[in-house]
Image (cartoon, rainbow, N blue to C red):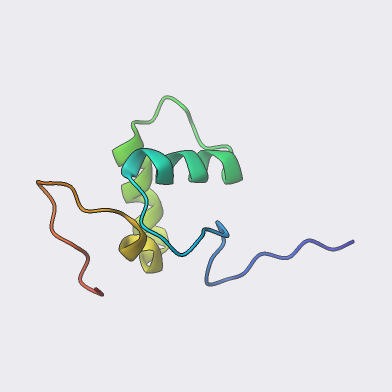
Length: 69
């Protein structure tokens, strides 16, 4: 059996909004990312590499929504 990853959704996330903590957990679960890295830093790094995920993150009070929404 060959496992494939969708290039448009490498995390295979559901179509919903995620908190930073939920998104960081998804990245750590899928890729085994460093647990010492703060959630917001991990999410920022991942969003820089995969900007299509910016719309999956719930904006908090200090953050505007992404530019694609």
